[in-house]
Image 1 (cartoon, rainbow, N blue to C red):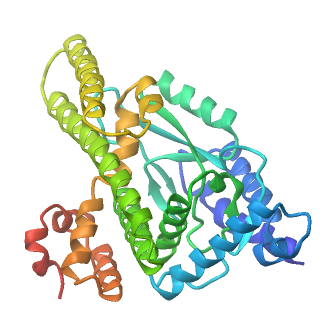
Image 2 (image 1 turned 90 degrees about the vertical axis):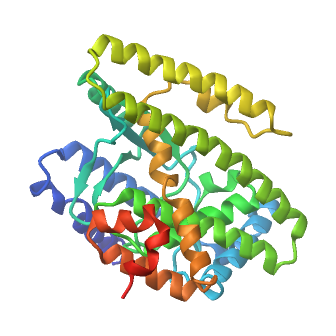
Amino acid sequence: MQHKQLILKVLSVTLIPLSLSACSTLGYYSQSIRGQLDVMSKRMPISDLLHKEETPIEKKKVLQKIQQIRSFASESLLLPNNRSYKSYVELGREFVVWNVFAAPEFSVKPVTSCFLIVGCLQYRGFFNRDDAIDHAVELQSKGDDVYVAGVSAYSTLGWFDDPVLSSMLAYGESRLAEVIFHELAHQLVYVRNDTAFNEAFATAVGEIGVRRWLKSNGRETDLAKYERRKRWEHAFIGLILTVKSKLEKLYGTALPEKEMRSRKAAIFNQMRADYQHLKSTWEDPPDYDKWMSRDLNNAKIASVVTYHELTEAFNDLLDRSDGDLKLFYQRVRHLGSLPKKQRHRCLDNMDTLPNCFP
């Protein structure tokens, strides 16, 4: 009976948009249904795994830590207290989904895909890597820049009891906690048709949550390590945001395509040089070499901007809320109720923040 109800729920979420979205295909929704059913059908309660003798000791330690993180999320971060992240799924693969980002050759504005439940997203997710690659090739053949990224976790926005995935266990404790807080934040506040708002909010909550988690456990050394990693990460993101601004300025000109293409390549070449210089200033720098070594393009830049461009604005909003999460979430919900342009004006200029609330 439970399996039948699960199938009906998946169908209600994924099939309804078939008649409403001109860009959708039966194949895409079929893989969504199969992928979601496969993940949900493999869930096992973490409490049961902890009592099984065959569960490896090291995995039990990680699962016990996840239970503590999950309790902290609801009790101290005021995130949804439901059955999400209280079960576990062994995927048998490195990533759960692969997101395909696309942007026109001369724009950093992502191509969107629209769905009934979640609205328009700045990427399209696939449970099968080959399907993601095929979609990327199709978009590339139309002239778009594309980027395919493996993803270790995702949120169904509370439609299902999201499990902890084996793909998430590759993270260290702080990163694992950050991901769980991030995904639960999507269940707390989600605004249709505004991926940048949703992802930046969840990213901010993830970072805030880890800082409070480590402080609550008196782990100052781990907190210092986390802050150091975040400074590296923010410096790298700053480089990407600078490149985005340069590209926007270039694409706003009326240069011939050949000249535009040449200058675009020059910006990315300069980005590689700037990255090497930035890396030389770090002690024990993080490894972004793999990301930088692959083709740089508009879609790849957009994939980072989507998650991080507004994050500092949310951090500022929390500071202006005196660290009060209840007030912070209340204000975020209010911003989410505003028209999109007004919402982003508030976040782009925090000095006018008092005028954004009743």
